[in-house]
Length: 267
Ligand code: GLU
Image (cartoon, rainbow, N blue to C red; front, side, top):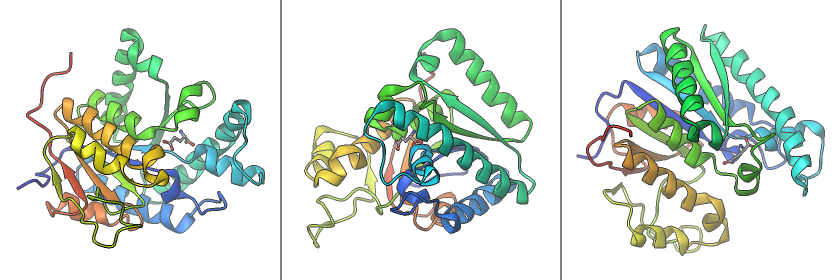
């Protein structure tokens, strides 16, 4: 059966829509619930790395801007403000459960450069060794492409491969991958298991409305593909109920499970 079996190390990715209200302000109740679940998962003996978005969204809310700035420096500035606020809240909430967090802001060039990648892996491993929880975002103040494309889904898969996680759990505002756009088609069926991410699978996501095809589902499929090529299973889950993570870890079928082929060593 395509379910998780006793993972030792997982990456959880949470997106802006899960963490914030439509006005950009932080959804404190949701964030608290997510932290409670993850703190408990770590207590159970599983290592967790959290890839978080929300820096720009929270920064926009905190700066009192009416909308996301149209210019890149504006979005970069918002991200720097929001990132502080995000980490402050994570530190505070995880701290309530006696957990320590460490922040890693990564760009593509850090991962592509052999020496910096090795340094990064060492930092991750040391954090796990210390029993701390790595919290990762793109370094939005310098990573302009990230701001333009907004793709922490791929980043989470890259992190999962870097730290050789057993699974990547992507929290989203939808229950999983559907065979048609569920907001337009009430007969749309949730696909519980995907064994290969083919063009046909991409077409299911691409055929969805603008909301899904620009960012939404497509980047999640790209992420699942990156993870699969490193032998890592991906589970796409509705993050509205962060407790769904327990069901995945209990080996239950929920959301969409992207089964990876046998793990290969990273080159
Ligand atoms: N790194 C961006 C942020 O924290 C978001 C990227 C994404 O949503 O995928 O605001």
